[in-house]
Image 1: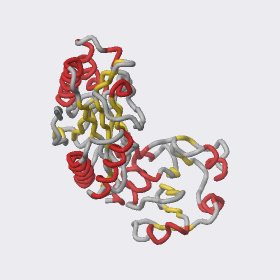
Image 2: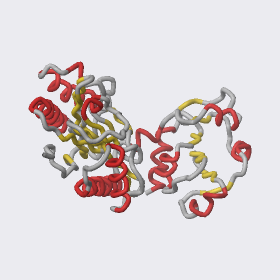
Image 3: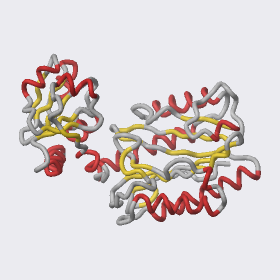
Image 4: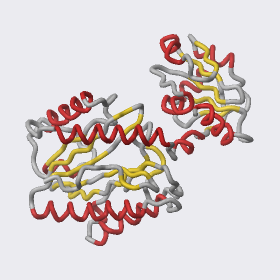
Length: 329
């Protein structure tokens, strides 16, 4: 499988560069099955070479391509042909300078495009991560402060088999729920209460949001958000552009008069990272394909009052992955 992915990446760069220096750990894992714990370099060319630190040497054995141990960045520079080379957008400028590329390089991101469509094993791992996250949520006791609840959910996910958390778990409530990425506080849980969380399994992530509501107005906003989410799930089909899904979601919220209160994209890809291409936003013209894993996450945020968000995951061409209901109480 890894050799097939390397061949696919080489096809992408063919005629554009003689090789690409890969340093993003998720991309190295995608191509080799080895996840670096410290800086590593994959020189992707007709004869790929993986350069690893001594601390990772044993773990990198058996990855299917030639592995060399480096002690200094100059060791990599000495082994890599620097003419017509490309680097990833995520490579730090300081690292580029240490390798000695000067200005003789181009920036290319061939792996991000390949990673958008997931194979069966990737989907299986994402689904396993989602199951862990949802089963953990069902076991969660909503007592104590927002921070305590978030910590408890993280702990339960670990016990259920998660390798970590997809991102800092969000538990927020009352007026602070109008902040999309609010940090949990020592405050007790108010209403509405919004929880955004994810688990990790086999290197792959999940991402889900649910909101508990109480008042009549909170219920009304929740129904708007759920309707928008369902419209997005219906729209996310093979052949549809990412921006068209965003429009489908956004149009529902606009019909109810809350267009100015929906202040982020309608969703994003999920995989080895919790935020991957494509982005379900007005500017992303990516054509959706069967096997892409996306979130649909509309929200309405009333500054100083409260916010509501509901988020599901789906496999394009196969449907929604979540099992938790939209209405929790």
